[in-house]
Each structure stands twice: as structure tokens, then as C-alpha cells.
Length: 377
Image (cartoon, rainbow, N blue to C red):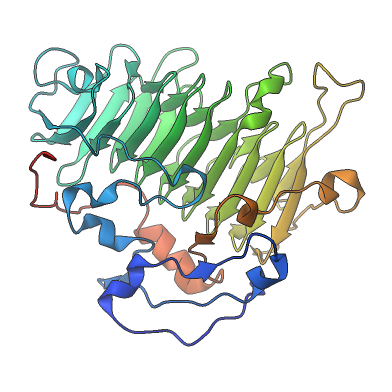
């Protein structure tokens, strides 16, 4: 089952990657099936899409996310902060850089592992920019608590230990978050948790591996205020992780151009009142063949229990994968469409070429830190 979208002739030129390939009209969903496409940049014969242009200068990253987290600007209007030590705290440490209410654009002058003895709290208007170095966080993870406008780019998360330890924990009441080009694996609990009314978040070009409970969106059935949650996950590689790619309660989630393979229980799970729009993804089963799972739970302000809803548009189900879709009913009729919230996003057919790209161009990347490292005046 291939992607049903039609494509116009590809255009040449390095700058084409700066524009999203598909444009959608907010009131005419039929137009969403006839997008145009651009030819992206290539690097070592690999198409590293989307928005390769964001590496042209240091702060070009700000505001370039697609989807629900597209407004995240991070520390765009703040001074540069340089991490000069692997220490868990103190002058020149990452923890010190993430403190305070003032905007900061955080870069690294060291390359190696930072062992966190406790959650590292990231305050509002911060960019943690791992380009140019290879930074690995271990021990504990990042906590985004009641903050906004945070960008986390090009980091590795590995070996988080302790009860309820997540790689990136987003709760409560956080918004305008973008997580891009990060590698995450082997944490005690989840790799990314988005709960307690946190919303307007994009996860892109990340590599998830060696893990069980990968991404949780929505806390539990008692947290009915999580109905506000909106998340976009795109161009990510879920590489043999067991479940939760993601698992969603209440929230609206747009999945596109992700590659999920060899899961242990299921690929995507729709729990109570969730709405999941799965578009042009690649689902490639191992021993467990069913991609989509529905779990019925009862919201505390409802009389009856309910599962979520899930719509598949142009997804590729490979290697004997069974979709497992439930169709019909009021839940499907209430499904959101992404164009109700944003007008453009970059999506391509779920081909073998895309699969190769996602295997090589997701997670931490060996990209240089852009040369212009001066603070904004």
C-alpha cells in the first residue's frame, strides 16, 4: 500500500530544501492529496531532509520546526553560553546554562559524556545545541517543567537509571518545544514523556533504539486536561523499540514519514479519546505483525470507557505487517486534520529511498557548529 499523493516534477537547486514540499489548504482537505514536491539537498548520496538549510548559520534553527512545535524559537534572542566542562553543575556546566529566565543559546566546547546525578531542569527560552560536538547525557534526563520555547538539538541520551527516569520529560504546562536530531536509548522508564497539559511540540529526525516504552503522550485517564495536547512526530526512526511509537491519551498527534520496524508489542497505540493521524509512514513488522493497537480507558468525566481514533493515509505496511485499523463510528468522524492547525509540512512517499534516509540521517549527526556564533544584538 503506497502513498496516494501525486507529485509534480522535482525542481533542482540547493535552496529548494528551505521550502516545505507539500502545501495544504485548511478548509479543503481534498487539496491535501495533490501537493507539489521539491528536490532536497544530498549529502553522501543521502537525502537528509527536511530543512537542511537550518545548519547554514547558528540561529537559523530557531522557528524552523514543522508541525505543532513550529513556533519554538529557543534562545534566539539571548547571548551565547558555552559549555566548557563535563561537570554536573557549576560554572561552564550545562546545568548552569539551563538555569535562569533569560534566553540563552547553549553550545558546547567539549565532546563526551555528561553524567547527570539528578534531572536537569531546562527553563524557558533555551536552545541546547549539540552541533559540532558529540555530547551524551546519562544517569538522569532533561526535565521541561512549566517552560516554553525550548529547542533541543543533536544530543545523545543513553543509560538513564532510577525509578521514573525518562530521557526527556515534558510536564506540566510546557509548550513550543522542538526536539531534533537526538539519539535516545536505554532509559529506566520512557525515552520521551509528554504529559500534564504540555502541548505544541515537534519531535523530528530522532533515532530511538534499545528500549521498551518509547514515547508516552498523555499521563493517565484521570488527567482529562491533557485534551489540549498537540504533538507532531516526523522523519524519526524507531529501531526495534518495543512499544509506544507513540502511545497517546487524549492528545492530537500527527505522524508522518517515520520508519518503525521490528516492534515487540505494537507500533502505535490509541488510548482514551486520542486522535492520531498517521501519514506516509513505513511500518515494517518483525514477529509481531499488527501495527496499530487500541486501548479502552475511562475518562473521569465520562460515563463510558472509550479508546482513541487512528487514521492511516498513505502508510506503507511492509514485511507482512497488518494495520489493525478499526474503522467507522463517531470516533473516526471526529478525527482532526493537520491542515486545521498548520498550512505546510514536508512529506514524501514511503519508499525504500525514504527508509534509507531515515536509517542514516536520524539521531545525532556529525555536523559542524555553524561559524557565526555571535550573540544577537
